[in-house]
Structures are given as C-alpha cells and as structure tokens.
Length: 397
Image (cartoon, rainbow, N blue to C red; front, side, top):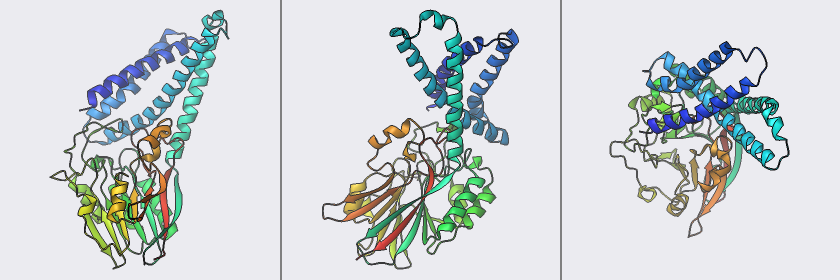
C-alpha cells in the first residue's frame, strides 16, 4: 500500500507550505495580525489539508464524491504553489548571497509581503489556467498512408477519459458532440476509460446516453487500461501498485450497454475490410490469470490492414515486426502538467502524437498516441491538451 508514505510526504509538504503562508500573513497589517485571524487561518488550512485523508477513509457516498473532487482541485493548486514558493526561496537565497538586496530590507518584512503576493497570484493564476484547460477538449488531426489495399477511412482515437471524481457526464457529452462532428468510420477507446472506482461516476445513465449518441460507420471499440481495475484513490492517485487488481465486472457491462465493444486480447475482422486488435493492459491486465498475449500470438491476415489498440505505447518494434499497420495508444497524458511534461519524452519512445516505426523487413507501422481527455490525480492540465485524435487513413497498396 502506498497510502501511508503518500500521506506522510503530503503532510510534510503541507506543513512547510502552511508555515510559509502563516509567515506571509504575519507580514500583513491589521486586521491580519489579530490572534483571531491566525486561529482562523490555522483552522481553515488544517481542514483543507485533511480533506484528502477524510475522502480516502469515507465509504462510497455523495460526501465522498464532493470531498474527492475538492482535493483533486486542491492538489493542483498545491503543486503550483510548491513550485513558485521553491523558486521564490531560491531567488531569495541568491539575492542574499550576492547582496543584491540589503539584509535590513529582508528583516523589514516588506519583501516577504510582496513575494507572498507574487507567489499566491502566480500559483492561483497558473492553477486557474490548468483547471480551465483541463475542461476544453481539442481535436488533433493526422493524415497517414498505409501501403496496403483498403478503403480510405477516418478513425477517431479516444483515451484516458478517467471517468470518476474529476470527469463526468458533462465532459462526455462534449466529447460525443466533437466526435460526431468529425463523422468517423471507426471510434477507438484506448484504455483508462474509468478511474478505478466505478461508484465514483457522477451520472452513469447520462454517460451511457452520451456514449450511445456517438455515430460511426463500423462501430465503437475499446481496450482496457491500467486504471480500469478496482483500486481506492487518494487525491486522485492509485493507492496500490498491486499487479493482481481486477476489472470491475460492472465496467464491462456498462460499456456493453453504452454500445462499445470491448476487445480483451481479441481480434475482430470488421466488415471484411480490416482487422482490429484490442490488447489487455501491459502492467495491469485485470484478468483472473493476470496475463496478456504477446503480439506475435495474435492470428490475423497480414494482407488485410491491421489496427491495434494498446493503452500503453510500448513494444512498438515488436508490433511493427508482427505486421501491425496502425498502433493506437494513450496512457502518457504527455506529462499532463508542468513540469512533468518536460521529462515525459525520456520515458516513452512516442510520448504523444505521431511517429513511424520501421521493422527489419521494411514494414512501416504508424504509432499514434493521444494526450487523452481526462486527468490523473490533480484536476489540471498545464502546457498539455485534453484531446481526441482524428486520423485520416489512406491506402496506397
């Protein structure tokens, strides 16, 4: 369990942030120097900080949903506040070291007063941008050519909806509207449809109706992701790295009733025109035996176009060598928020967007990874986008 280490680190961070905020408030003039104001601040900050623990401990209920949503927003603000305060402290140390500001100025409290406001405004502004940006679904488009015979088609790739405490029916209605505007031939949901806890859905029937409203020529298909298994969340983060977690049976039933066909390490020949593969997740297959097939264990006609849905964009060379033409994935969120987005490229060969992968025999596979619609942990997207991907496929064989 990761809960205890998470809570310890979380409380330590909040203690030092709270101390900085308290010292900042002390630099204010009346009425903030009143003892009552200090008591109010300490009480309020303690309650906000403890909500994440309370939400984790509560049984499934409307109160748990409310507390969980609040903590997901607070974590986003906290991350930005930690970042700007760390920069402020570093700047203060450099200013003192090189004596760019006299020491008596620091002792006067005025720099602390000004720096506090700057940090608060920057963190609040950056967080507001991140919260708003996370709610705006954009459309990314790619044109690719497959060297096989086939009928030109349009695929819409969706991943990482993370339905639960952060995203719900409003977002799915917006998504469905944008998908239908593209008039797709095929819609692929590449995993992490749910955010671990099925009971956290805000309006199951409304979400079903949004999914049912999506139109496509060949249908809607999906594969599982690492969050489509049962796990308790703390602050939007998984509380366990247990590889034996299983998919909630209600999730599959929900998707079936929503008109989405789930492929669990299965292939489907669609209208005798192309083969679609749906793989179990690499890290959390979610099945009784907790295993998934290797890509070379799937049987398909290589002369027919082969499309693969695989949540985690891994094993790209293996898929290319096996004869896959188009690989569709998500999982990375492209880092989701600053500064994680700066290092995501070191973790994945294709962290976001489009790339070609060439097999030893010269076969070209097109890898497309979406940044996803939903969020993991803090409800925030900074310098990344919530998106669906339009893929226009032409065949040149």
